[in-house]
Image (tube, rainbow, N blue to C red; front, side, top):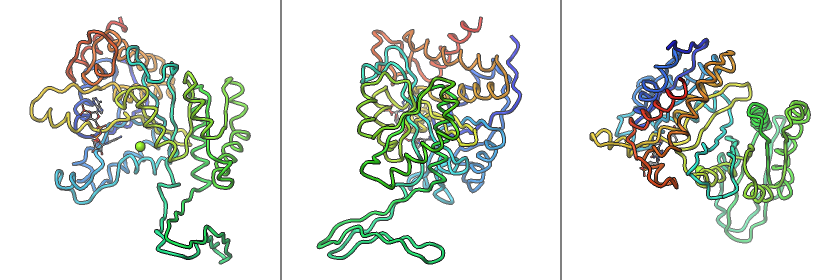
Length: 403
Ligand code: NAP
Ligand code: MG
């Protein structure tokens, strides 16, 4: 068989622990035999990040800006325990945070639907994609624990010294205050990423805040979204027959539960944090979620939504058998290959990505799965496979579909 050829390289970001093991298996079994893989490789494994003082993470993000599409393996975000485990020079920042800051992106997460894994919400027959704004609000807050009676004020001092001052509260005893912010620039980027992704995937976009209560703060989000929609996207949305829909956050949650899915739900930072966990859990779990970082200038980075599956890795190191689900990591590769194919006009690459995804789904629907999947599947007599055998089973299904 002739291998599928690529034009532009993908930026390949390798990672840590069990997902690093799966990464190699996926390349060896499911990609290299079929595609003449062209990648620019960056090792984001913690050891090499430490060796390069995290420069490799920055380089990989800049390469993504250059080439446009990246695929990333899960990586360790160091904490105190990892400092000792890996003998780190510094507690390096989360690679995802660093990459997101450079690409100025928004993360879109969507479940991978498989027959036999039934969402808790029975009418959700299509995926709901959550887009979470990843800057500001309560995640960059300033807080004061008020010790006793006194006056709390909100003060903005302009560069020329003029002040805007608002009374927050006159305390007659102890209490608490919090200052939060966002920027029009970040909100606009978020809005553009959401509108672009909706156009890209031809899905409706929902956005909700609490603007009836937060008449300036949340209202600003609503206005920026509406303004960008009217000026830049309305025409395209109408041409594609998709809709932009704004409502109050409490109305949105009620509608989401009653819906059949099949749309993008744009959430402010906190709403997205909470709702993405709810939606992921309701559809199955994180091992069946895709995640893509979309920058407002049309750059894409695909990854799995789960972490490095540390517990399985330690079993693997002890020589014990693991049954780790590789589907989300495979979908990171297929997402990136399909996007590369679309950008480069390579129909066979797009077709291969679609077939590999279909092969993953068919393999599970045929009853062959990993242990974690068998626990959430209604399949009567699942065949539980180890990490490598599961990937080999997907390869068999794939080869059948390529005949
Ligand atoms: P995790 O890797 O997502 O795993 C948590 C647990 O979920 C696992 O122990 C496993 O449960 C189950 N699980 C997750 N993915 C699975 C899969 N593909 N197949 C089967 N089971 C799966 O989260 P963590 O253990 O809290 O974090 C480990 C490391 O990942 C941390 O160092 C963290 O910094 C990093 N992390 C990275 C990313 C990223 O790069 N995007 C995201 C999150 C966390 P059982 O053990 O019960 O089988
Ligand atoms: Mg959370």
